[in-house]
Image 1 (cartoon, rainbow, N blue to C red):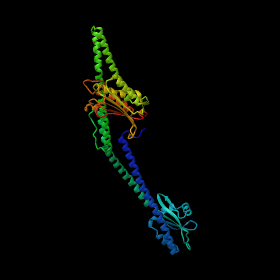
Image 2 (cartoon, rainbow, N blue to C red):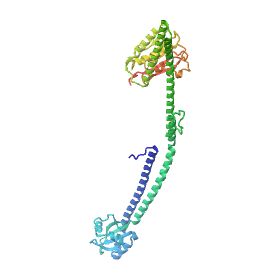
Image 3 (cartoon, rainbow, N blue to C red):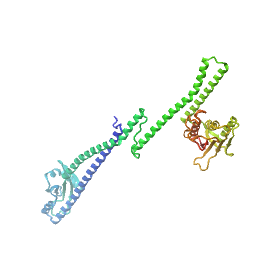
Length: 463
C-alpha cells in the first residue's frame, strides 16, 4: 500500500505536517527535559545543603536535642530524615509514614553502601531523591549517619501538568499550522491549476490560449513563461509544417498536371508520332523534376534527423576547384574566379558528398539567378589567428543586382523563391546548404549584395 500522496498538494501538505510535527514535538520534549534536569539539579543541591546544615548543627550541640534542632532546620514537609546508628538501624526518625514504607532494610543497605550518592526512591506513587550522609561528628551520639530525602511529588506534578499543556498546545498549534499550510498551498498552487486548464484547452485545439504570465521572478511565473514559449514554438512548428505541406503540394501539382495533361491527350487523341515523342519527353522531364524534388526533400529529412555523416579527411581546395571547373564548362562565357591559399589545401574532416552539394547549390544559384556574363567570385580562406575556434571560410559572390532586402529574412526557408513569378528551381537549394553547414557544426549567412559566406570548423564533422 502506497502511503505517499499522489498529488503535489498532498505531498507538500504531508511534508509540511511532518516537519511541523517533528519541530513542535522536539520543542516540547526539549522543554520537558530541561525542566526535569533543572529539578534534578536543584534536588541535588538541596540535599547537599541540608547535609551541611545538619553537620553544622550537630557540631554546636552534640546531644539528641541538638539532633532534634537540626531536624527542625529541615525544609518542612518536603524533607524526610532518618538518623541511623552504627548498625544501620533507625535511631531517630523525622519522616512521614509514606517515607517509612519506602525506607526498608534493603534500601538502607543500598544507601549506606554508596554514601553521598543520590538515588531515586519510590513507593506507592511517592517519589523521592535520597542520599546517605555520614556525619562528621558523632561523639557521644547514638548515630552514625543520616538518610536525607526530598519529596518529588510537586516536581512530578509540575512535569505532568507541563506534559498535558504541551500536548494541548502542540495539537492546537499543529492544527492551526496545517490549516494555514492548506490555505497557502491552495493560493500558491492556484497558478498551476490555471496552467493545467489552459494546457488542456490548447491540447483540445484552442491554439490561441496562453497561460497568464504572473510575476516573472516567481517559480510559477518562470514556468508560465517557459510553457508559453513552448506553445509558441509548437504553434510555429505546426504552421511551418502546414506551409511545408502546402508548398510541396504546390510544387508537385504543376508536374503532375503536366504529366496528366499529356497522358490524357495521348489516350484520347490520335496523335502523330512527333507529338507522341514530344508528350513522352515532357512527361519524362516532369517526372525527373519530381524525382529531384523528392530527393531533395529526402535529403532535408535525413539532415533534420541528424544522421551521422560519412566523414573523412578532405581537401576543401580540391573539392571547390573541381566544382568551379564544372561550372566553367557549363557556362564558358561567364567569368568565374577562384582564390585559395597556394600553400594550404585546407584539409578538414567532413562528408565529401554533402559538402560538394553545398558548394554546387551556392554556385548554381549564382549561375541561375544572375544575367549571362555576370562575374562570380569564389574564395577560400584559412583560419584566422583571431578565431577562438579555428574556422575555414568559403565565400561565393556575384556581381549581379543582389537579393532584394524583402526576400532576405526568408532566404534560407524551404521553398523560398527569389522570383515567385518565374519560379526557377524548387526553392530548396539554400535550405539544403544551410542544413549541410549546420550538420558540420558550421554556419552560412548572406552578407552585402549576394555574397554568401560559409564557415566550417577545422575539425568539422569529427564530433
